[in-house]
Image (cartoon, rainbow, N blue to C red; front, side):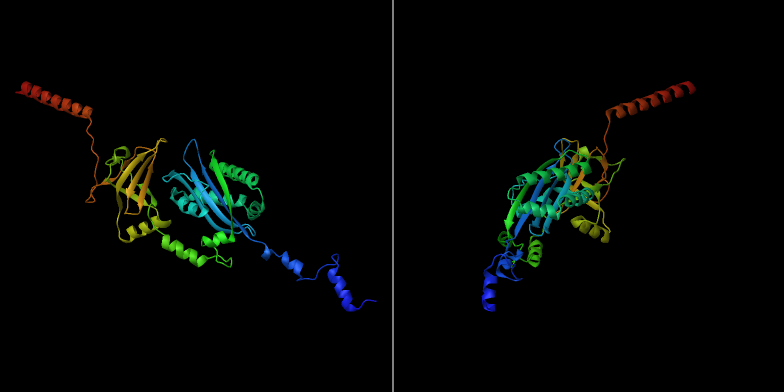
Length: 329
């Protein structure tokens, strides 16, 4: 009859018996021993026919938990930068996306919320686990595009790519520390060091002057245009608060005027060496233009027909006066 020590030996060697908790076989299959995989979903979309919506996003996420680690989403109606190449490395792409143009706040909030309803955490995990992500990426692109088209009522062209990376890749990029924790403090420091307003465009609303204003089609560089800057967002809020506190009007010189094929006119204003203002006009409106002394600079145009009519009226008045004088005297 085997003793207790022999029974223990048989139990340990018998594969049919369940292993106790904390055994070597269980720990070898622990989730902590599985290498973490991370992914970045990159997308560029636009309206090819009407050309009035451009957008891009780059979502960096944990492929094990589905948690979003970083997200850059941008949509604009006035493309001033270059189009986005989704094959670009995700970190470089995050710097290029905000340079597309003036951010459309209402539309952006609507589309970004819709994006995360479709690209949920479960979908993110499945995308990272998939050995061949091409078919799944095609399905994800189609669902997001259909949702965006219903929200914008526009036909959209989509370009999407998926980039997979390891924890070491993110550690080299400064997103993770060596132990896999988020390098939040380092990221904040890096963003603060790299923060610059260079190339920033501030959406400006022109002041209309139907009587004495200058038409948009006649604006020239160095014309001083009076505008209104709406506060509440980024650099525009900073300028708005400064002008309000100093009791100054927002009057800036025209840097250049561009006209597009979609009958839109883009007027770029120079606020300072880094900040630029942008006026988007679809009609030839008369804008309030001031001279360098801050006085209204009116636009006076002389119509030849009016000159002739005025001359005829003066001549007629002279003839009538002569006739009356001859008859009375």
